Length: 304
Ligand code: AMP
Ligand code: MG
Image (tube, rainbow, N blue to C red; front, side):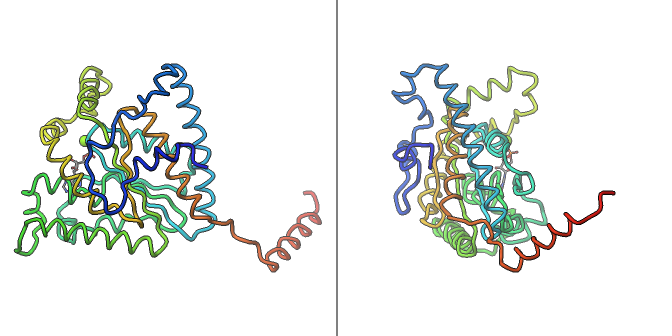
């Protein structure tokens, strides 16, 4: 059973075919009336409880995924800087068996990667059956940062052609086809946009600047990208509108409160895996007999 209320889940899931306007999604969603009334301490307590329950659920779901070995889970995390991608991965996955989980962080593409089609490097990193794979940034960067900075397209050395609206629509089509292919072949695709407000990003950047232990987290280029905030939001709106499908929906997760982000993401992953209705492998009659023989043999061994 999902811990996050169904109506709230409906609010953050991007309905396929709907036009996304990010103004309709509140980054500070936990500051809702009932939470405010509960008071800060109660909220913190509840948050820890919810996260703990989510972790347990996720660990169980992942165990089943691994045992049944028929499906993979691909988790796509996209966000502006300081929205909490790394923290979400750390917290959400902390209860999960490391053997069943892999994380890939995508940075600026290398020369070798730029020599291939734009999906190549992501294809190579897809999770195998039984595993949860997390993409910390993803092929969506190719319609986000690259759309905001079209000069990056030059480095992709594409054949001459139009670089207008149809170019981006073609990329969305390619992404939808790619994800449909994954889903048809047994990969559950879950996509999260961690929706942080510009105001909260400023607060987190200042926090990094004020705390020497956090200086390493601050990057001058993050500051530069902040200057393109509106362009990014527009690029996100276009991408979310075009690529939230029944097969692979987008979730716009409120990210101004870290605990909300973590609880919601963990909950959606655990619930979605459970909805796959996986089963632990059945033990065949033949195997049962082999188990009985093994038991007998062990029982008959001399104590050395
Ligand atoms: P970070 O995740 O903050 O360490 O930064 C990674 C950087 O790599 C970000 O500035 C991304 O925008 C950039 N990046 C990731 N994927 C791509 C891509 N496909 N093309 C260009 N830049 C990218
Ligand atoms: Mg960064």
